[in-house]
Length: 355
Image (cartoon, rainbow, N blue to C red; front, side, top):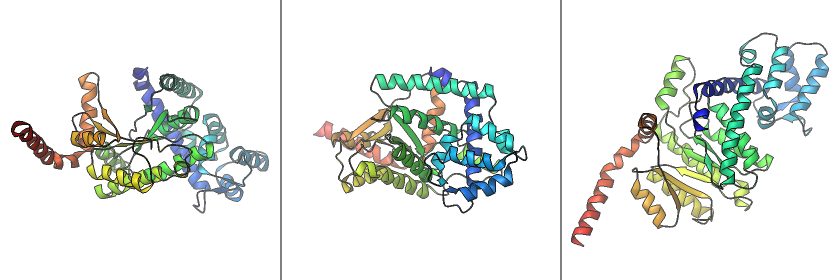
């Protein structure tokens, strides 16, 4: 099943779906004229008349707006927009476009749509198995050019399987400038739709590729300018997740995996747990490090009553090696602590030999 999920055809469909989702987000941005995060009926009508044509326009506009504004609030929020504008509706909208630009070109064909549904079905079988076995499934993040489709897949699984538990975990890459905004949007979506948000936070592993791609395409660099900005984003998102309303009011656990080899981030997490009065083992916060990396952190956390896991990559060496190289790049600042770890090992050896 995992082979199917990572096949070249599957990756191509994820890229196509991501392209379509980016156009959906861009269209919302154009509709949101005053940039307040909401699209009013007036904004919707004005932009619609600029971009689309068709008979009985007033009827079509009213019908379309009601599709997005199901609760009759008088405006469309980003969550309602992205959950309503599915491939069939996107194809219908493209038929009204005055110009066959990037939005119309990003529409999936019926065959591509079938492939997306097939991929969703395979993923659902995997998540259903995890739910039956009462284990958690953490879905990793990838390059930004196909991350939107992964986010969409994860959210669809969380809606179904996270109603009463933290079965499926999203992954947020904190080296991205939009990481905190996206995380907040996902948390809002979970609160509004009444399911449990669960997330693993990492720093990110594709910095050089992301910057090279953005430069070649003449786009803004999606990565934070400095490592300090990434650290700051990591800790801000951590606090956003720990302090969210549903956790503070006791309706759900934090459901957070702090995947890091950075001692400062670990210490920050501990401070936040104490600040918000959360128990070490019952909070729903866990730490994660790779086997063989920052073992002193792992053992210290475990000895002091925190949930902590060792990640163990396994499989053919040629498939595992790129993953391990990315982890080394992601944790390049960790190399400064090697001397510290060697010192601790030497001290422990002396203690055992001399007593």
